[in-house]
Amino acid sequence: MRTVPAILAEAEAIDWALWDVQPQDRLWDYRASSVPAAFACIAGVRSKSDADDAYNRIMDALGHNHSGTPYPAMVAGARLLAELVPLLRGWQSATVVNVLTDCYLWTRGEAEVVTKDGRTYDPGAETALRQCQGHVYERRRGFASAHRDLSESADRTGRRECARACRPRGASACCPAVRKASSPDFQPILHLETTCRLSRCTTD
Image (cartoon, rainbow, N blue to C red; front, side, top):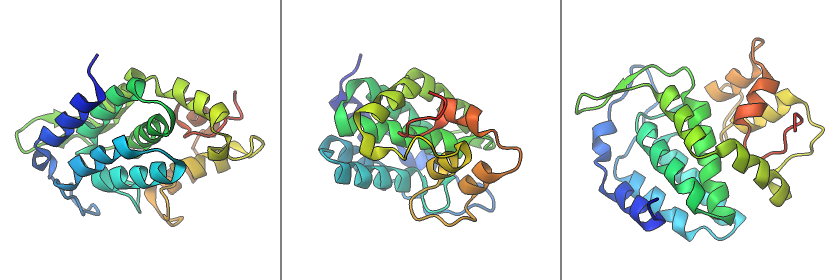
């Protein structure tokens, strides 16, 4: 198993410019240079405030955080995040689990991406795989008990919990992630069992 410094060093060494491939008709503010710095801030997380800041920095680097729109770089980012999950504890672990969960939520149903060096990836499949590798669901259940201030009351309906979980900080109700959670054919209970954030599920 690799160490945290080794994984963060890889985040620094990756050529993130290879992922600077804008899908058609997508919100875009990707800056390859921002990704290594965002990952580096994980090491400095010591409190809930630090965790919130790190979450936003990483999601801003890997996606359009306001709208819940993923950038192709989220594929490579999710791989590193999954490796970090079993190595971290406390707020650092909570931060990475939270980010990795939203990487999966944001990339579900996304079209394949082709990087500048010609490699093809399925973002949804890649992030789902990283969820499994990082045992993210089990970690979320543990955080729900250990960090009650991160969770909403357990008696909220499944749909409200899903909307809260999917909704990026500061996003409006028209954002794609919120619409996805609010659509008539959405299955909140199934969604909660596999993809809720750090909240206690009503299905526990």
